[in-house]
Length: 547
Image (cartoon, rainbow, N blue to C red; front, side):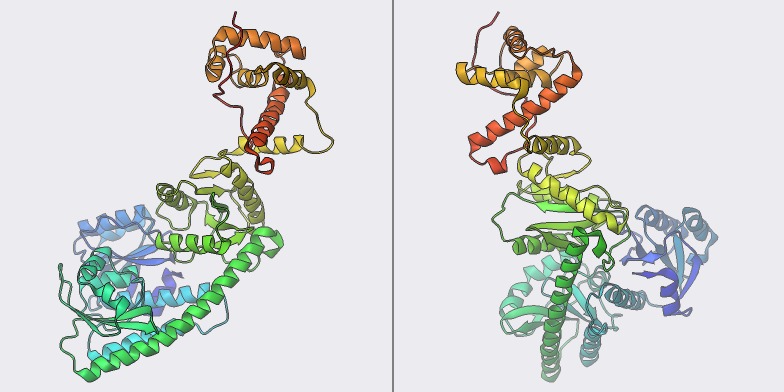
């Protein structure tokens, strides 16, 4: 992340010139948007107006950038300083930057991405290591490009771009999109997959030649990067033309050096990840351990990522969630594990497209629930300071037992939405503490049911749930309303209490909940895992005397 003025200062006035200052200053990413692009939505992005050559298209792009919460728009001179373009930008509050006429868009992409990557690496560095590590990968890409006089990228085993050469002017649109998005676009992946490229990468050490494809995709030379039998990544050269054997051998030798470098980076990344997990866990457990946390702007929610598979190894669940979140667009998810449950810290603001936000995690939960209905995403209340994180964490943890007993909404819910279930759960727990409260006025009903096989306890519970609606109460018990009225008369005679008293009804309803839960727990044979159930809506009962 870097601010707009720092980027312009870094690149100099010979390349960029500010025209309009926007309301947002922090650049989180780079988006390439041409005149026909209508689909981008990247908050905090620097939008490059590639191919925008008229005022009408520029204003339309600016409008879309505002809706996408972009940081600024870059347009070529002299279009950027056109009053018909600069005026709307100033009015809408989005930054406008002019790219000098002689400058290349690919050059700008390379320079901007390099500066952004370097700033991100420094900001997210969790351990002491040389921040030039990733810069070395760019140096390898430049050296390879110089060897064969063709654009080069270095990618990992998942087609994510790690580095690219400065020489990109002869690259095709697919390569430019790859550099900007940091990942090979899916249509291009399908093209290479149909040619068997990825299958051969998994099994071969030999260079792979790929013919030209649709939509202007140029030929490729692909060199696998391996450590033993493990594929770490690959080097991709765009349209290198016929190469002599010594140049291909030099690329292969470069791949061997890059493999050692990637292994070192992976080891460092693993150590950094472990440190992040430990720091985050300490911060969630105690408000005194939050000084070292590196979080995006708040407020935040702490979210428990619970599931019914309690026998699964905690480390496996944590790695699984990290993999899922990374795949859905959150490159460095804030994850840790507490008592075997993965916990995430997400921002409370942002749309479903904002990776790392609560809305985004809810959308992910909906997708996950479609094929795994054991997943529950349970969020504590918003934390407005880092000291509030431990409170939000405790609230998320409190929802776990409710979710596993079906008392919290799935696949996602918040502490606020489940408040009533929390109240019932806490009340139930209080009734089990010493000194015991006893059955109180309900004891005669319990004894009567045990001695005569009646259903007075469940009848009273349903009556209180649907108080003032005898027909609904009778329907929930599958009995006639007259039968319900008869039972209630018998019940009031047994307990000798006036059910017109609202506070008395509340106390009886809470106590009945505890009794019914204990009965359900005993029936299931696992009292320590008893659900905190509300009064049942439907409870089959024997058919007794009717009026």
